[in-house]
Length: 274
Image 1 (cartoon, rainbow, N blue to C red):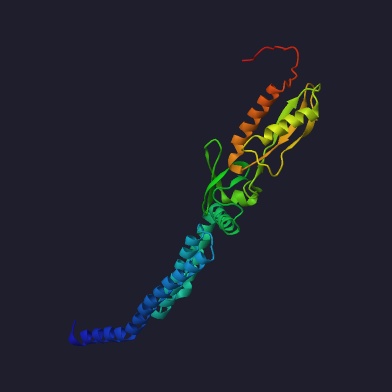
Image 2: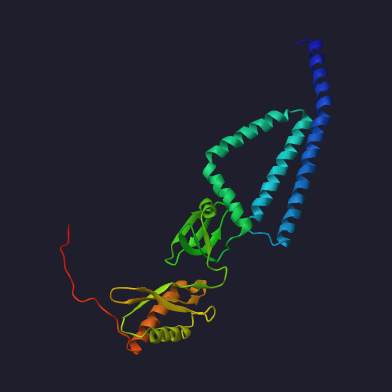
């Protein structure tokens, strides 16, 4: 390499540095200032959401989404200053996002449904609910699913897409839940007498609420008994314990008052298959 060639290379390097250095410095300045502004904006947004008593479950997600989105915009602006073609980058990101969206279609549906659940709040942690045909207490609400704890201490993880597409029954919304119980009485007994016994028994059960008042009525006429419906109200957390208490106390009250039960006469036996 002779002296002229070396001088030419040095001149090109100097020209490139003189031309590129201001752009590089501008890009670095945009990144530093932009990231600082994004951090401040995210902090202010978090404070505003907390003051507005916004959902604690969705606030971190919104802040993270805002933070990432704004930083991507800052990086694209810096790339444009340097001279990188940002249109192609945006196209690549859009195509990648579309491909990921197709691959995770079900998960994205649950994600969108989770945002609706967190924003609209049809239930909250601690509520007794029935979602997607499942009954239990809400333990956790996530972006993708809702975690229920059943009375049998089973943990149910229900996808939020199923929650939004189905009917949601919130037993805790009104602060009371009605028990749907059935009791039988023989035809020879007086219904007003039996109703009075059941009503008095319900009034002496601590778990049964005074308001709304319990309901006792005839539901159906069976071949051997009259089917009665007993509908007391309890706190949602006392649902199963209330059922056990009412059944036990009503049986004891029937025993004390000599209320008899009708039994079908005769037992017909048949063979048992393999």
